[in-house]
Amino acid sequence: MNYYKFTPLLKTLIWGTESWQISGVADNETACDGKSLNEIVREEKAALVGEANYQRFGDEFPLLIKFIDAHQDLSIQVHPTDEIAHRQGKPRGKTEMWYVMDSQPTAKLYNGLKMQITPEQYKAMVENDTICDALAQYSVKEGDCFFIPAGRIHAIGAGCYLAEIQQTSDVTYRIYDYGRRDKDGNLRQLHTKEAAESINYSVLPDYRQQYTPVKNEGQLLVECPYFNTAVYDLTEPMTIDYSELDSFVVLIGLKGQGRLTIDGEQVDFQAGETILLPASTQEVNTEGTVKFLETYILS
Image 1 (tube, rainbow, N blue to C red):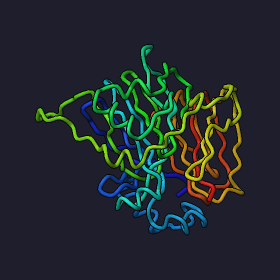
Image 2: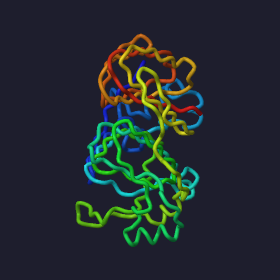
Image 3: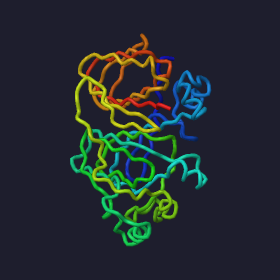
Image 4: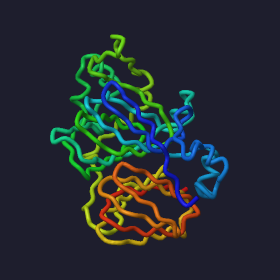
C-alpha cells in the first residue's frame, strides 16, 4: 500500500480524552483494514519502517501518536530514560513532544523546573503540596511547541488541545495529582520513588521550542534520537521528496483540509486525521489549505 489510515483508539479518562491515532503499544494497537499496526510491521518489515529502524526496533512500531483534549489538569509526571527504565524492569523510557492546537484562551501547562532543587527538596515539596511552585508554567496558544526529553517534569493543563508524539511506551510516573480521587473514591496512585530515580534536575531559561512560523515550507521543530518533527502550513501546492529517506513518515493533520498524491495515489487529508507513509514512499504532492506535522526517525 502507498499509505495507511488507522482507526483511532478513543480513551475517556478522569481529566479528559485521548485519541491514540497510531499505536503499537501492546493491547492498545491501532488497526487498518483489519490488521494491527505491529502485524503490518511484521509483514512489511524494512519496507514499512526503513532498514535502520527495523534493525533498531524490530517488529514493534517505534512511535505513539496521540491527540489530547484536557478538560482538567493532568497529573504532574515524569518519564524515565531508556537506561533508567531498563533498571526498573521496563522495556524502554519515554521521550515526547507536544504541538499545541486550537486550545482554550486560559490553557496552561507545566514543562521543566524553574528553580534548582535537590532530590530531598523534591520529596518534601511533593509531601507539602508545593511541587508546582518549582515548575515552569506556560500560557499556551496554537502553534506552541514543547520538547519533553525523558527526565523532565511536566503536566498538561485544563483547556489544552494538542498533538503528542512519543516513543512507543506507556511508562508514566505520577508525581502529584492535586489530591484527586478515582471513580471509586480512592486517591490516585503516586510513583514517588520511581519518579525520584527518573528526574533530571537541570534548569533551563526557557523550555518552549523557538521558531518563526512561515507558510509553504517545512519547518523543523524537534530533532532527537527518537523522532524528527517538522510543521507544514500550506496554502499552495507542494512536492515533498522522500526518495532518500530511510524511514516511515507520519503526517498528522492539525488544521484545514487538502489532498495528497502519494506516489500517484490520491487521498483526502484533513485536521484530526493521521496517515502513515511506508519507507518506500518516493514523493508526496499536496493540494489545498492544510496544516500538518511530519515526523520520522533518522537512526
